[in-house]
Image (cartoon, rainbow, N blue to C red; front, side):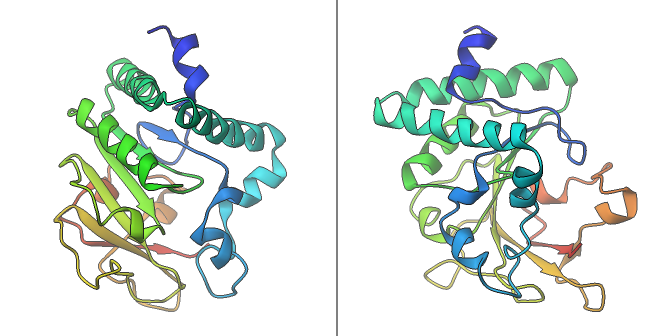
Length: 222
């Protein structure tokens, strides 16, 4: 597969200044649960950074929307396996080029369907050297599949200073399903606090978000 052919199915980014490795983003205004939470004060989605970025930068907005449109086109044309191959190609190519074997799904946007989650799991299975992290508000999609061991799914907390969200059945049934929360500066973090705010909003050497042994990561609201 050529690079130009791969990005026709959606573009993997290697330009995130905060995180190591690659990322994949889609339209944050297409979030399902997130769009509902965005209308409610006190939720983590009410001040969504990705939506703000899309409003400020038309090129970013176009890129995120294109990624979603290309995925939907692949889905409608029964070409999800081709989409999977394009993601695998780009993620592996960048990892081998940079020596950084980490990938984040959705630094903007969220899961759209069970089919999308299944496709992402296939990408993870085909990139066993890569550590994948997927934060999500869409709990109903992740309780039905066997999750690859190199994928850390983190269920995002809905409320600022709230408790971690659980699966729909009230309990985690897989060891690599974890959580994340958001806290304000006057509240104690739950579990391990993300210290990126102390490093000019950069992960540095920390890889807690990808680590399934870290059951909850708490992000300071900014």
